[in-house]
Length: 189
Image 1 (cartoon, rainbow, N blue to C red):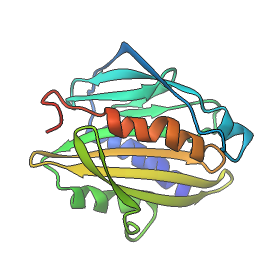
Image 2 (cartoon, rainbow, N blue to C red):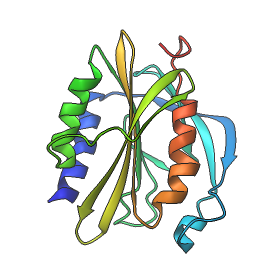
Image 3 (tube, rainbow, N blue to C red):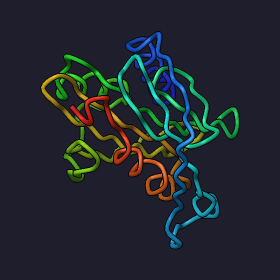
Image 4 (cartoon, rainbow, N blue to C red):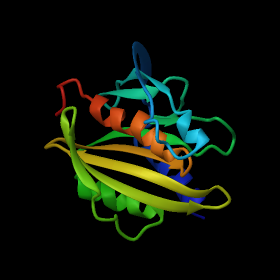
């Protein structure tokens, strides 16, 4: 049921931003996970990030090279048919962060967002960070990193979902650089 909700979240976000045009540019940046990652899968998370321009949403984002665009602002690792590892980077013009959070709660199968884990000044934004774990049978625990930022004109979302074994390395190699690298044509706002 929760797996269906996570997939429904992806579909909802895709519908909200249909018609997106994205182009990868050659601005690679290599990141790797810290040496103390807990599993073999996590230790393999050396990732080369490329800059992608999402013209419809007005975002310039960092995405792991080779991940597939499955919807506007939604990128899937796709190592197998059951790989739920996904990075979402989107803008919601005219939407307050609280309204965005409310719509996400239902999609994640939670009643309320947990207390923020932290705030982080990264790139042009001050992000509020949330850590959520969802049980997705038969996959098991899926960790969700959620970051939201708000300006006068829009709310911004970066979300990484990954199986527990891959999560620590992807948090470091993908999620944190994605927060740092998300920009708008105006340089933030």
